Length: 378
Ligand code: ARG
Ligand code: ZN
Image (cartoon, rainbow, N blue to C red; front, side, top):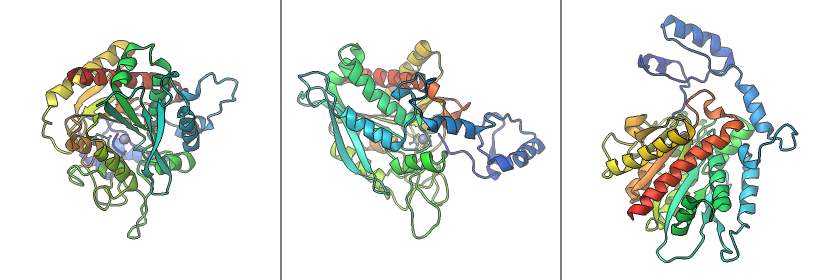
């Protein structure tokens, strides 16, 4: 999801028909309301007390007797997430598959936190293809890392009982990066829940962070990104200037012959997107990709009664160059997607834990639908 407007003047470019979400510091809310009124812009306060929500979501108290939710239906600090995937790595599906889950170190973040990928692999068939899923590229989109863990847990629990996930895992390995931006994620837990970028610093500015989804080499820093270090969509000093971007790009470059499908998980706004976001031009297999996301969105609507928009990024939301999905596509991964999970703006980034299971199951259905379609083609 695009960063909310940080200053007031973007209001003058609002289209009459478009809804916009503003995050406003509590002490300026009256001024903003006055301004909106003066310009005859209708508005509604969606969340009057976000701090209460934030407090509830970080309390994360598994010993609370009123909380019946499991590990996967709560949000977790970076330490808990890391601890969890070390445990997951010791799990196996059966005695024939001693190495179902492997942890691979692919690099480290600006603040020197490890970047771990989990590899799910149930057999060693020759010429096996693979699927990649990354989560948490934007720090405040907490449902995203929750989804990656959900996916791993689901795969381990339902392999051999759910026919779709069994078919997928029998035919492809899955690489999962649960937290692409660990420094940013940690910062949202400790300091600023609404942080989006990574936490890299630079001598030439006092502003911190690069938008990692503007830092890939795909029409880098053109319209839809900013070269201003204080911007929420700052593209960085050059493509792949950030260690997180570079680690992902290096890994995918060295696995590009086996990785067939790329997924990047974001929130919010409920959309299933594919390239391009960096240009309004159509991708070479546009209609094939459209068909896939359309089927996934229809299944979500049928099973979960929830609406997801779908289409190419630039035509469905806005131009956003330097994104990982476009870069992966240009690398040769022809099935490349960005999902924006729940919700459509009621809670936004502060999606309550009670909504995690439905949000993840919807996204899981979309991943499975697309993976099966790709597998049937190749
Ligand atoms: N909300 C995402 C962002 O602003 C959109 C991602 C779509 N893909 C892209 N390559 N920009 O980063
Ligand atoms: Zn995002």
